[in-house]
Length: 150
Image 1 (cartoon, rainbow, N blue to C red):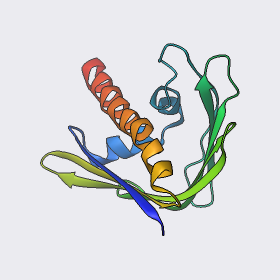
Image 2 (cartoon, rainbow, N blue to C red):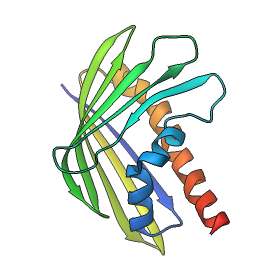
Image 3 (cartoon, rainbow, N blue to C red):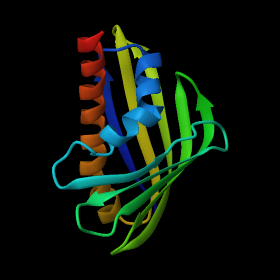
């Protein structure tokens, strides 16, 4: 059996802006927690194109970092991203999943839907809920900050 993680959010920004912020190398550090106390983001490499790979190394200060790898199979700006997702955790090994992120023009903003599939255990899926929720909340803050400075 495989478990699915689905998260949805509405952002007060057009799909192009939400897509670009979600995919942008400059935003990745913040989205992955670089502004959080006690959290390090060491490596950010972003190549968002079909066949491209993005890598982020991050984790609690003073501990061996986690490595997140995304390999893109569909890049349809500003509508859709499909990717193979891999998270390597020092204490538990590597988890591989598939992810689809859609950016729908709705109600004067963007409805983002993130679906991650391929979790072999419910606990593994549930372990990612907090991190992805924080990621999407930080995305809202980054988008707001861009509007406040524009």
